Image (cartoon, rainbow, N blue to C red; front, side, top):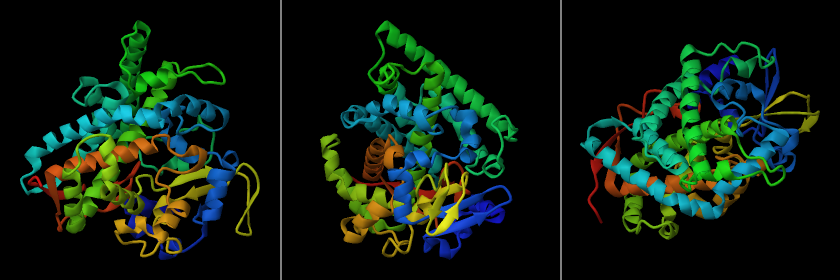
Length: 438
């Protein structure tokens, strides 16, 4: 188990035994706990959809993220989590997505402009660029400020350090113990978590004052901070809002940046698809209504999320004795749901390792989406920003592909590794050149 987890952090692809892509379930034994990787669609549905309260999020992963995320919706369970979702979900309802579109598009326009000096055909690491673009989207939609805002820039810089120093797997993921038990975080991890939270506190406090004065912009932060829980009448105070903003930044920035990088890499590997998407993107009129015409862009983004899901694993815990596939499972066992394996599972997908955006129009693709596709989780705990993320990904891709061509740097292939998300060991190196208008 320890050898496997060490390899998982070093190179996700090389760490995986081939049998895990065929297995319905795998059991891992350690001196401290039992862990079960679940790839059986019926069991996944039981855990995420039918009885989610019986399988709360495991604190073995949460303990490593709590210095930054506090008691955010990403880490909580039970009644507290349900209250948080009742307050947050209205901000991401269907009608609100249209309201966020101008800010997303403005961030994409800024990303296209920033990339111009890099479009000279020489090898470029695009991960800093996709991270910058995704962070810009978050700040524009959440607080109505571009990434060039001084505080936004400081948060972004601190988070770049944090996400590299805090892997998804850490000591707390292995050794059970109370929350006060030392977790031996790296000094940079502790320092950057405190800095990020202090900066977010400043932004949130200012926004609360603007709301009180009646001058707050109608963005996501205002919507969330002014929404009362329909059952209790409570709203988030500043510390609670800081927790939520931290996870919005983590989920909305880090995962989107990873997804965008891997999609551009896959398109560089398949220039025929890239040219097709460029033509479709250049025909887009730039409107929210016109997004429905970006069908190929959407299918490519979905296929990228299948092959390189930003969050490679989710961990739940059993609250009562269970029986999984005729095997007894004790209370406190760890239940690993792995999009990385499920999305490439040989029993679910035809030609699972191939890049094939056309699969989403086939019966196998549609069935796979129902039974073996969960880049945003599923059930009541599905990511509240899933719809937002799909719009963001399609918009940014369309804008970048309209303006630029991306080509492989064959001597520097990316190696996928698990940090907080599926990133690369040494960067995502591509050649960028201007693309002539259609």
